[in-house]
Length: 505
Image 1 (cartoon, rainbow, N blue to C red):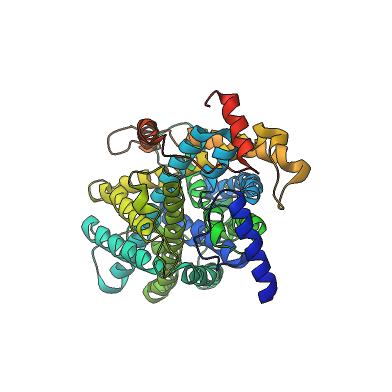
Image 2: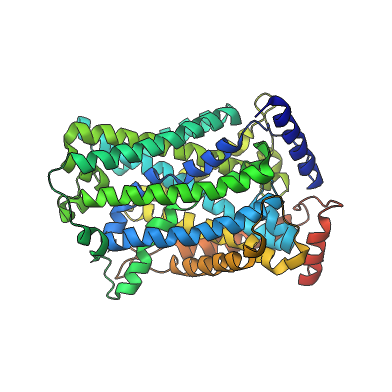
C-alpha cells in the first residue's frame, strides 16, 4: 500500500471518528494484518488449548475436546461475523459498549461495558497465570524447580510487569509483536504436531481420539458433562473483540477491524483442531498424563513422546506464544479502560483516560489493567480450583457482551446503517444464530463443573457475574450524570430513538 493511499485512509477514518463524536488522540499506526494479528494473538490456541487441555481430559475427554472444538468454532464464527458487521459501522476503541449505547441507549452501553471490562481483565489474569504455570513446568523439567502456588504467583506478577512495560512503548511495537506472534503460533503448531506425529513410537487410535469419552467430573449425565467440556473451546475462542478495541489505531478500520475479527476466528479454528488432534494422538498413558507432576498435562505428553530435551524446547515455544497472547490482551483491555473512562464510566476516569504525549498510549489504563488482573488471580494462592474460576469469569463476562450489540442491531432493523463491511441478506440469520448460541453458553458456564459442589469445586462465574452487575448498578446511580458517549448530528438519532423506545429519556 502506498503512503498516499495509507494517508487517505487515515484521514477518512479520522473523519469517521469525529462523526462518531470523538477527537482522535491515539496513533493510527496499525495496518490490516496487525489488526488481525492482535485478535489471533489474543485467541492464542497455544494458550487456551494448552492451558485447559487438562480440564478437557476429565470433562468429556478426547471426543468432547475434538468435536466440541469443531462445533463451538462454527457457532463462534457466526458470533464473529455478526459482531464484525456492527464493528464496521462503529469503529471505536469503546467497541462493544459504544455499539450497544448507540443502538440501545445509555443503560445498554453501561452494562455491556462493565461485562466487557470484566471479561477482558479476567482474560489477562487467565492468560498470564497460564503462562506462569507453563513456565513453572518448564523450570521443573530443566532444573527440578518446584512450582508451588507462591512461586507461580511470583512468576505471574513478573509476566504482568513485562506486558505492562511493553505496552508503554506504543501501538507500533504492539503491532510488530502481534505480527511476529501470528507466524510464531502457526509455526509452533506445525512443529509440535509434526514432532508428536513422527517421534513417538506409539500413537492412540483414531477411534480413541474421536470417540473416547471420559467423565471425571462427578456428574452422571453424559450430556451435561459434554456441555461443561465445551469450556475449553469457548474459553479459547474469546478476545477477538481486540480488533475492534484497536480500531482507533488501525488504518482503514471500518473494513480492517471487521476482517480482523473474522480472519482471526477461522484461522484459529483450523489450527486449533490440528493442535488438539496432534496432542491427543500422542498421549502415552492417559491417567498418568492427567496426574503429571509438572502440573500441566500437555507438558507430560511432550515429555513422554519427545524426552526431556524435546519437551523443554517445545514448552519454550508454547510459553513464548502465551507471552505474545498476554501482551495483546493487555493492549485490548487498556484501550477498553481508556475508552470507558473517556466516557466517564469508571471511578477515577480523569486519570485512566490520560494519553502519553510521547507515545500516544493510555499509560494509566495499562497499569490499571495489569493491577486488576493481579488481584483477580490472587485466590490461586489458596485454592487449586481458583484458576478455573478465573477462566470462567473471562467467558461469563465477555461472551454476553458480544451478543448485546448483535441483538440490538437486529432489534434496530432499518435504523441501523451498515458500514462498508456487512453481511447483506445473511445478517439476520447469522445474527440470531449468534444471539441464541451466546444465551446458551452463558447459562451453561454458570453451572457447577464438578460434583459434589463444595467451596473448592463451586463455579464462581455466576457469583462474579452477579457481583459485577450489582456494582455496575450501584455505580450507575453515582456516575450516570457523568457517563455518556458523545451525541452527534449523524448518529445521535440512533441512540435517541432507542432511549425513547425504552423510556430512558
